[in-house]
Amino acid sequence: MRPPPTSPVHKFPIRVYFEDTDAGGMAYHANYLRWAERARTESLRAMGLPHQLMMERHNSLLVVRRIEVEYWRPARLDDALVVETRVMAVRGVSLSLDQRMVEEGAGQPQTLATLRVDLACIDRHTLRPTRIPEPWRSALGRVGEEGE
Image (cartoon, helix red, strand yellow):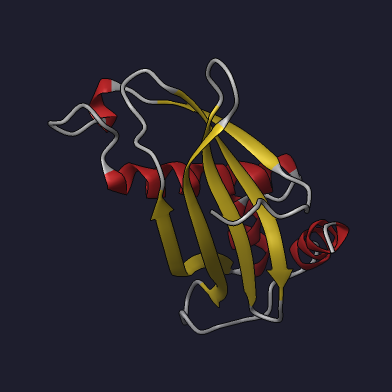
């Protein structure tokens, strides 16, 4: 497993509920994507830059272009997890993030899954790529640069 990046991290707590588990009592693999989406949304909100504002003021939205997921250990019913989100790069119309699902139970934190997420900014009407608008570009760029 690769070491975590050093850029600032946003932490979003998650609890594994019965509805999140499969027949084997482990968190269903697709739920990791839902949890990652919630954490990305909340990390923008924590910077004072919610998706809704981007849509209303700039007719733009961030959409997933690519996700790579590595599952290391299963999350189980009632586990307390934290989704860590780090900005890795900000480019003209795209953004790359590192996200991790970490169990912070008793003892040393355990990484359960790692995600590499590439987002693209698109015009919500034409669905064509568009530059990430200000102030998102500056705020995300500053966050990504702090870890370099």
